[in-house]
Amino acid sequence: MSSTNTIALDDAYVRLSKQSVDVLEGKKALIRVDFNVPMTDGKIVDDSRIKAALPTLEYLLKNNCSIVILSHLGRPKGKVVEELRLNAVAQRLQELLGRDIEKLDACIGDEIQNKKKNLQPGDILLLENTRFYYEETHNIVSFARELAQHMDFFVQDAFGCVHRAHASVEGVTHFLPSMMGLLVEKEFEALKSVFVTKKKPLTLLIGGAKIDTKIGVIRNFLPIADTILIAGGLANTFFNAKGYDVKESLVELDKAKIALEILQDAGEEACQIMLPRDFVVSKEISENAKTRILNRKANEEMEDGEKILDIGPDTIKRFSEVIANSQTVIWNGPAGLFEYTPFSEGTKALGKAIEENPNLTIVGGGDSIDAIHRFGFDTTKFSHISTGGGAMLEFLEGKMLPGISVLKKHKTL
Image (cartoon, rainbow, N blue to C red; front, top):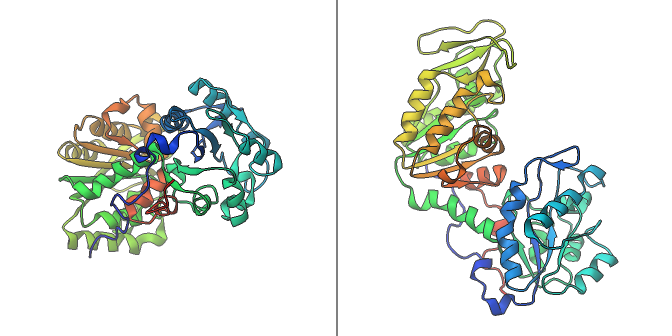
């Protein structure tokens, strides 16, 4: 068995950072960003994604460009949803940039085109939620063409969306010279380094609830990883496949065959897959839940109604030792239901072990990033924290990402 990684890891992608000042001067830049920020009662809960786009926006402004910004927010499914308008995003972006932002209430139409046509250097337009249009997710050519109209070039800076062949992600590149923004370039280089340098020992810590989105990643790492640590609800599927009764735990019964195949393939590739030896179980999920530690290796059985909700102290010790002795650590997915204090220790401890590892450490996935913030870890101590959960997984799986692959050997300005 060999790696299924098919991503072109060379430098044949056009990059904004490589464009000369003379080329960019006074041009109109269409940029796709990921401003899909969490909102509560119309207010932004976390502006990290807006801040992540600032370096590219400031780079364009420094080079005297005018800018038209495209982004989606939530899942309006092709309809206008008032609470998913980008008004709050525009206000926050204006505060962060310290510049006026003109927010428009549409993406296409005569008014939009006139605004774009008359842009002056330093002007910034934020168009409305691209997913208010069904043409966006269906990658309709006419919609992409209109988005690109009156613009000089396109910048792809929405790493969280590059695994989607949408009109504002992939479609517009067929009408404009297109290139990676600074954020996408940073993501690309960080994730690429895993496959290029292959610093050993290499450890993949993978958790979360389901095996479906992680199968490809696990298989792609079997030939290059020294150890794969499996935690969270994902581990329950492996337990079940090996004949252990996980009672009421989250488990994908129909994935038993796949789990056994992965274990067999790991043996052929000399990659060690480590499953939890002990875990925290409970019959309820709450802040006051009564828990107990159960040791699988000691043949301790679960009781009816119990669920596996975190890894136990022995597993934390073993996994943390592996992490500490690794030159490369990639983390995606929590070790348990960390949102509740009784089931948070596994994720917290493993996250701490990764934070303290001075070597190459890469973290991705919404839950893992949430845990980093929740437990107050120092984000500067991680080599790279990815802004794209699904995109990161597909990159690590070896899939071609439509929003990046289309930039290879693209026409330049």
